[in-house]
Image (tube, rainbow, N blue to C red; front, top):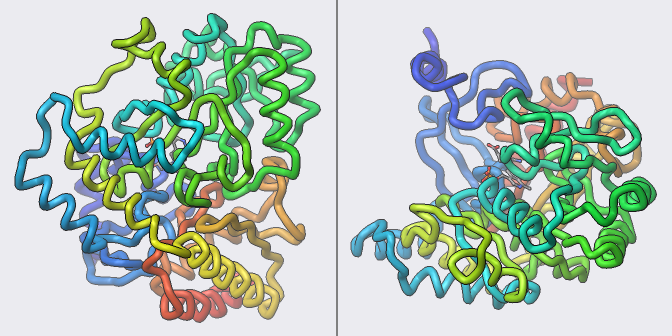
Length: 428
Ligand code: KE4
């Protein structure tokens, strides 16, 4: 007898490509059939068969205050009773914009959109329009959503001409994207020596979270800032994942770097569809209707999503919020490393405040994409299922970061480490 999730997956695959509305959810990264979640609360997910899981995905980052937080729920319900969408300016859009500008000093003006992809795509167009240049630089292993110019990987050839990572992206467009190595400033220096005057912008995840969690090497972000400023290119921080997660003022506050444009998503919507891009007024005023660079969206600034995002950000104002997140992430990752050591399994972690990475590797720390790719993915896949069976829901991919919420406490971490001791033994 198939469990309910398996039955639902069979039905979903008949009318949704792969049975999912976003590929990573299909469990192709870990094998097996995805669990279908029916509800969530605090640090927990509950699947259609009634199984409970400690959740370390948090909808891929947005649920930083935990699922169904009473304040967020109340804000959504309050807005719901006044209508969900008007297609007009609303006061609550300004309140969220003001909150973002207060929390991220490099942002004087911000435009709301409906996803991180849309925000990154718009930021690229803004940088190209503002500088009059066409080429952009991204980093191998970093992900900025699925806009054409960003679905590009390093090609061969001296200029590391980009080649598409997906059919449907024209080679002519991919050619305008140069791919560099994350945490490798020499590589970037070489690219700018070759093509500096043509480069509109460098876009980077200040803490890589899409090659699993890889923090910036000391001096790397400072180097990006220096090189781009020297060549008149813009520096775009894609903080869709790190925004408000790693520090009250995001990664740029944690590392003390001022980018030209910041891309946001996830936490800023508290689980409802919100993305955003912002920066100094001198740049942002180039965006329609004040400037010529076109960008628009039917549901941009949706009042329900704004209410959810604003209530979430207001909860992050609590004294010690990020310190507690950091403490619990440290307790979790240090406990996992001990459990792996006791089981004799080569394993290490990375963490930055409320995000972390798990790696099956004998290396003391994982510092770049090549080292991530050398990790034991097959052992991670087995570990993932051993943990799932014991009620712990990790990201279903060896190349994704994990997230802790304010709802994770002693109990949840104890349950997780108990499951991990058995899971490490099982994958020894
Ligand atoms: P969305 O379009 O998925 O809202 O955001 C794209 C995006 C942009 N920038 C960064 C740094 C991101 O991490 C993302 C999306 N993250 C993935 C998981 N790593 C979302 C999960 C999914 O694709 O289903």
